[in-house]
Length: 108
Image 1 (cartoon, one colour):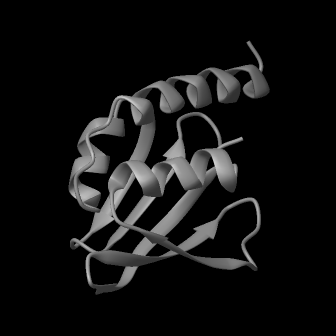
Image 2: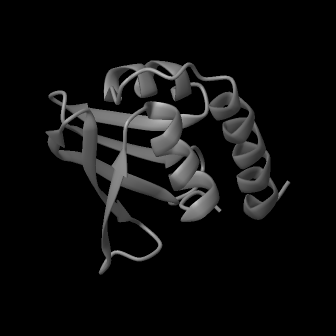
């Protein structure tokens, strides 16, 4: 099985896991617990996390910039485009991961 096939399998599993998530506030610790079977995770404090697909170099670095009225502003740096930094707004983990997987295709 080549790396592209593994990446597609992991992405399908990630999508299923995100669809089943509860709508809780942004919390990197719960993301780490839920996705550690599929992703390599490393965390620094409660505001910084790195997520990488296992057996590939595809991943993201997330950090919470600030919280304003229940909306989190999250900085995203992707390994595919290291020179670009995105700022995503999200209220829940599900919304954040949905944007990362579907809209910005960070793990494809």
